[in-house]
Image 1 (cartoon, rainbow, N blue to C red):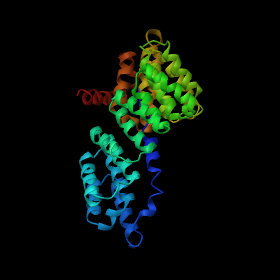
Image 2 (cartoon, helix red, strand yellow; image 1 turned 90 degrees about the vertical axis):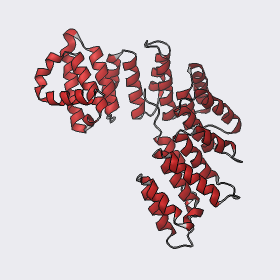
Image 3 (cartoon, rainbow, N blue to C red; image 1 turned 60 degrees about the vertical axis):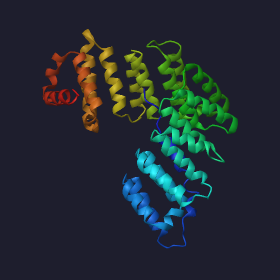
Image 4 (cartoon, helix red, strand yellow; image 1 turned 30 degrees about the vertical axis):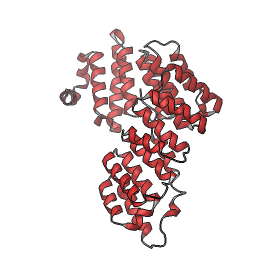
Length: 348
């Protein structure tokens, strides 16, 4: 089951950048040009080059925006080593100056995203002042590392200090157990954040994981959340399709996919992996030809959209064809080279 996308959290964290941009040292004519070079390099993944330019340009060392941009790049590309060096450099450059809240939030996010939760927690605990971004960055880090106890405990502390946002709710719902998930669900209803697509997606994932391969109890809860969502994104649809496939309800998974496709919602390779598994489970025996027809159609779509480059989808397609009767592959004999290639590359 897919976790809620982190793209929204990145956008949320980056949204604070505009208010800090004015802190660039505009008295130096080339300052903005230098900052833009650092930003372009770091955004493109050339973090070492960006840092080299940063370290060799003293005026940029006073720019909070530049620090934030570099920490964000280290987080996004998982470069813990460079993030640690940058953090040490920032402290050594301003040993007596209180750390900027905006930049410190990016430091926490960098450590958390790179898996160094000990350092993230240390920076968090040393802060004189925190805001909702500070709390959410650490909560998200605990959730992504599967540390559900710390995640829920910190979320409980957050409730005393400030109002959680949709990203904090989504993180804790995804990571906690069924009982805690129900409690957070009730709180989301009370605060009105249940309308958030991130919270809705997290609830679908939570209830789907709690359902022990049977369409009872939690399964119906996941469906109710899905049906109640005013807005659904790709993660919403993929989570529900994967849930039905997990519950061995291939017909319903295919039905959701048809509803998704009929509504003009774009799907991806992950969508097709779940649907292919559902086809092979729903059509067998006398119905195998219908399943094979569906596989062939999805195969054509996958090639047309370039999804066949993904080994997970290629493997799922081979398995679906095989489960539905390998002898029927004579009708698509031209694909035998493809199957041979996937079988070989998938052995490891």
